[in-house]
Structure formats: structure tokens, C-alpha cells
Length: 617
Image 1 (cartoon, rainbow, N blue to C red):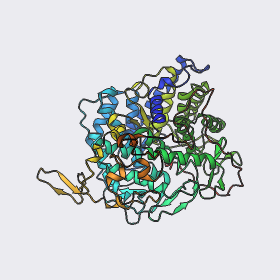
Image 2: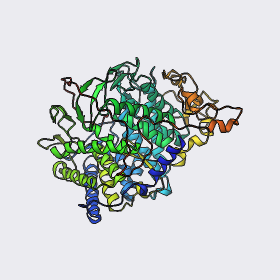
Image 3: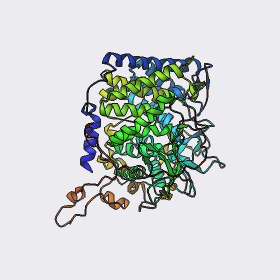
Image 4: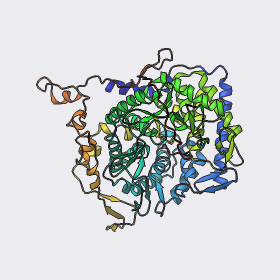
């Protein structure tokens, strides 16, 4: 595993090694700069509209120039926009925003919030901005900054932990920030909702030296994967108590998509091969049973029978993920198919029926989603093919002429008639504009934190910048990181919460934490249930990865012929089940993965409810 991993990280760190340097024939470097500046103006039209008419409410109503609270009532759009401000080099706005949040934001509020949305938007936004504001190497260090955003992130994560106290380890979908999980809270959650927490929670553990956050997020992934079908597919919704699937439709879009995304990205950021192993198996199954070249369909997770021949807009992230995995050829074909829908309507509807080749009834909206733009950026970065700049220019034009309104950018409620709706999701500034700006900046000659900064960055599913710093990505090289907790099962942790608190001699509040529910995590395919943190994390030397999780990544070695140290390091080549991490990115010799084109049976005649939220969910 070492050679592909090191090659992958090296290629991603050195963006200049991506094949191709030419700018599109139709987009000169000067024109690329103009387009980049136009996107910058787009950002500030929407951001200033929010700050002037909606702040500190969560989101902007761009038609009527008002505000609304949609998540928790804590300046959601500002938090989601922080690292975009830093990426644009706006030191003044970035500094003032960080300082305001540090002084005014509180989470001890009687609000019930989505675990998924709060994690990717708020927790991720705070962590990303903290890592930028606290590091001189980013060029955006704030001299007066004293880890205020990190303390807020830790407090918020503590308030979400009660949601993970379930028999499966998969969290409830919502939690009250003051009182915990309501007794009437639904036991049904989406696969993406339980499996898209590893990056934010994992980084928080590394920044706070507290393993609990990473462990609960990893247990959730294990709980989902342990309940996969015999053909390695997962459903869309699951009961977090019984572990039964309540919706058995498998796909790469709504309610599942970022589960796949975070498996690969958690491996890239943390180097944990367990995530890589799961990703390889899950990706192989997706390509075998969901890929109907160049489209993806939804099938029954057990039988692989076709149930829904639908392109939904959330699937559009997939080509970008394939670029990260090195599987370029199918990514190119799928992106072309998805973009053809955009060109047909000027936007991508939430649902496009592949049987009737028309917009799915009830799914005609475009809520300013970033996924297709995100994949366009990654494919241009990998290939430098002129078509992706042309595509970016087309998408920019659509947004400017179809979605721009008085104080920002509007949802499109009907892509066929381009009818505007009075709402602007925070992810428009966190992702949609960010990926467009990065695309044209890359063509113009990049000069930004991502392309020229000191670190390799992984983008969260909300587009937040997560750097592969030594503190975050190299902890596995230092056993002492989690080893400090190995012998201490009774943790005493600082908290901002008044519940169950006691005051110590120094006047600060502490709480004795009960994490017995960690030992109840159900991971049926491995022998880890009931083990303490040290063994669950598997960071201390001793057992091989295969011994810990019941899978074979390492070859058996005769201990009589090798000393103990060298035998632990003896490896064999792992056969990739789906992708080569990372393969040749030369567009003339594209890497290939398994592509099994299954015959599509008649679609189940049902209508899926339209979703206008970011929920991927």
C-alpha cells in the first residue's frame, strides 16, 4: 500500500504535475482572468447582500432583501463563507468576521439541529477558518486570534455527541444543542447523514488531542458498512437502533453520495487504510451495479434490480471524486452526460428521468448546487482539456443571467421556465462560487492558498479547506498521540455545558464523561466491538491492520527469518478492486476501472419527493 499512497499524495501536493498546461482555445489567459474577476464580483454581490440585509440570521432572501433562520440562527452564511474570504485574499473581511464570531457566537441555545448539516457547514467552517487564522504559513494569520473558533468547534461537537449514543453507533439525524436527543426524535437517518462526519470530527480530535470525536465518527461508518448487502451496496435510510434499512434503494446521489466521498477523503487526509479498503469495495460495487455508462441509476441494494432510472443533481460530484481516485476515463464520459442536461435547461434540475429524457415531475428546481461545477474544476485540473473552461463559462453565464437578483442569487424553482425563488443557500458562497473561481484562477495562472499554499488541501463536502498539516495527517507516525489515552478509561474533560457540571478548585467547569456507548458499536465483520480506545484506533504497534480488522493487507512472514520490526513492515501489493490510486493522468492513456453496463429493466413508477436542501443526503 505504501507506493500508491505516497505517489497519490505527491501528485496531489504538486499540482504542476497534472498533465497539460494549455489554456482552452476559446479562453485566453486574459479572458480567464476576466472570468475569474467576474466570479469574484459575483461572490461579493451575494456576500454583501447577506451582510447588509440578512446578517446575523442564517441565510439571505435575495429577492426581498431580507434574512431567515434555516439551521440554528447563528450566522450560518458568514461561517460558511469564511474560508472563501481567505481564498480570495480578503484579509480585512476575513479578520473582522473571525473576530465577530469569536466574540458573539454561542451554542448553548435551545435549538434542534441536523447533525449532518451542522457538521459540514458550521463545524467544518469553524475548523477550516481556525486552521487558516492560526497559521503564519497561510498568509492570513490574525495576530489577535487566540483559538476562539477552535473552542467554539469543540463546544459544538460536544453538544452533538449525545446523538451517537445508539446501539449501532450510527447517530440520530438531529440533536438539541441544549438538551440532547429528544425522546420523540426519529430513529431513521440517511446513509450520508451518518457517514459524512469523519473529516470534521477527525480533525477536531487531532487539534484538541481528544480521540472521542474521531472515534464516534468512525464507529458510525463501521455501523453502516457492517450492514451492507452481500453485493457491497448500502441503502439510503437506516434505523439507527435496529440497524434495519428502511429504504433499500442504492445509488450515488441523494441520501448516499457523500458516504462514498468521505471514505476516500478520510484515507487521503488521515492515511487510515481501513477507509481505503472500504472505499475500494464500495466503489467496485457502485461501478458494477449502478453504472449504466455514462449514467448512474438506483437499484435494490440486495438484488441489484433497477428501481429508479434517474439522474439527480447530487450525483454530479461523482466525476470529481473519480479524479481523486485516478479513474479518469469514466469521469470524462459521465461529466459530459451530466453537462448535457445543464446545457439543455441552463441549469441541472434536481431530477432528470432517463427513461423519458425529461425533467422529473416535482424535481424541477435548481437550488444553486455546486456539484457539477466542482467536478468541472477537478477534471480541468487533471486534464487541462479546453472543454472544461468552456463548460465553466457556460455555467457562469447561466448563473449571471438566470439566477442573479436584487441582493444576491436566487434558487431556480423551475429550470424549464427559469422562475426565481426567494432563497439563497449558504453553500452558494461556500462551494458554488469557490469552485468557479478556482477553475478560472487555475487557467489564468493560479495564485491562491490552494494551488500555491504550503499544504495540500482536501475539500470537505461543503467545500471547506482542510489542510494536510503534520498535526492532522501524520499522527499515525507517532503512537504517543492516542497512546496517552490508552490506560485511562475515565476521561475528565472541560466543557462549556452547564449540565452535570461541577466546579473545580480553579473555578473552571469539568464533567465526567460517560462514553460506555462506544463499546456498544456494532461492527459485525471485525473483532473490534467492546475494545478500548487504543485498540479501536489501532495506532499503537503490535497487531497488523489485517489482524485488527479481519482483512489481509499484509503477507504472512516467517518470524524466524525476519526480526519483529521488519516483519511488521513487510507488505504485499494490494490488488485494487476498482481504482488505481493514483494512475497515469495523461489524457492519451487514461486510467480505467471496471465498468459493467447492466441491462436496465422497467423503472418502478414512483415519484421521488423533491429536495431543495443541501442534504445529500
